[in-house]
Amino acid sequence: MKLSSAHLIGLALAHRGEYHKIARALKQRRYVEPAHHEAAITIFDRHYPNSLRLLTQPPFVLFYQGNINLLSSRRCVAIIGSRKPSAYGIAMTRKLVDALPNDVVIVSGLAKGIDGIAHQHALHTHGCVGVLGCGIERVYPRAHHFLFEAMAKQQLLLSEYPDHVPGYKHHFVARNRIIAALSNPIYVMAAQAKSGTLITVDYGLALQKDIVVLPYNIDDASGVGCNNLIASGALMLTNAEDLFIIENGNGL
Image (tube, rainbow, N blue to C red):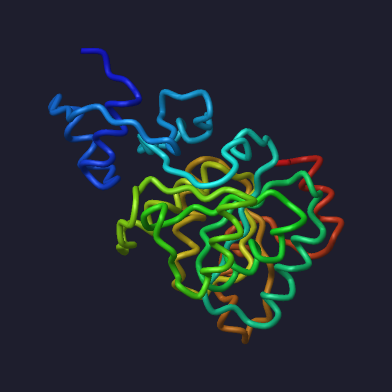
């Protein structure tokens, strides 16, 4: 039997988007009834980004709300950071969004903190892609209800999890690979010494993406992870001229 997009969607619905369960079913040829979904793309579809195919575990199906054509942009950057940034991190994230050309699409995770701030500030000036760690119809965190609604109408929400699947811890780890694969460069605007943001950085490094990091004062705990990345060789974001260099010499 020839495998089709409908088969993949059927498996994604049956296994609630869990990559390893879908992969196991495919390996064992345990197919389910084909299914159709009006807002889903599969690894077989033309809208599926080639950058995701470079992952060792590319999502088989992506469910979405909004403008799927944003995935076709060749100018996608990630803006990521911790859920509890300092006032400095917040202000610099907004300045970064303002400095980026308007045709740049901003990719992030719609989480509290830097992710949500980047999306909120870019909502009416840039394209935005929010990659969820829960079902595509589930609003999480609840505090982002209005941002979620606005992005579903004007921008793009993506998830490999269908419907109202809860956001488990491993889902948020897994979604970080999608953020990293879609974007170049990856801007890190806030990260503590042990931050989930660093998981996205690790995925980005494995994909040879440019990592651009905001520096912090040495006594600012909200930026210890950022300073550690810079010490390890990441590019340092220091002024607007850096954006020009990055745009013309690296990912953009």
